[in-house]
Image (cartoon, rainbow, N blue to C red; front, side):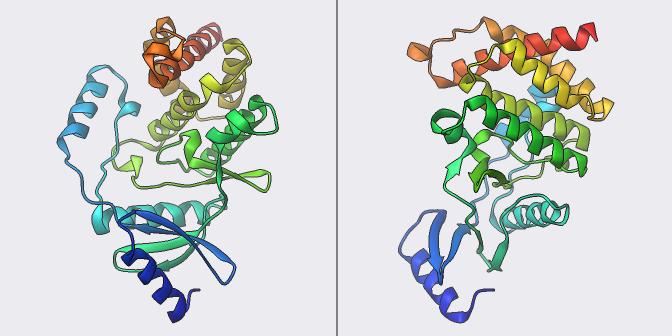
Length: 261
């Protein structure tokens, strides 16, 4: 736990910046200090969620993003639930009225390791698959299962960033299907292996998921496989288009495997 001197140091550091998060080390304890996020307008999410439902893809709905004290409480609740399930999340060291302090577990995101790590990108991809599967075995789910929200430290992955709770909008199987989709979306373009191999690895991992998760992801694969026809070159289209194209190529192969099975 942090003592009064630690807390005074943190408050002084917060007073010097408007940044939402800061990194600080106190008596060899590496910490992330996270302020509350301001509440956001709700209408963009309502529009997005309406479109997702009309497209028959409920797992693409966004969770409420509360901000302020309610948003902080959501993140603390998710961190505690995952920790109680034995999953690798940062430890909480202190909770204040408008910020909290948690363990800093490392500097390198999985997204960074996929691009610059010493091991082949496919190795890190499989590590992430295993961790997502472990999360789901505990009947849990993530908030934003992007590679940037998985931290590689001491040869293992940690989970971070729980500003929202998808179960406020989705069923648990839908939230778990969403995890697989977001993870694929953030990783596919970094993999050197063929889309068929990536799809097969994902399919093998899904084999022991509940049928409701497989059904939801199969529906996504059917409806989004057309994304493979998007341009695959970053210039002039940009990273987002390339990410969608790479994920679409894998989803097409996944749909073929699931349909034939």
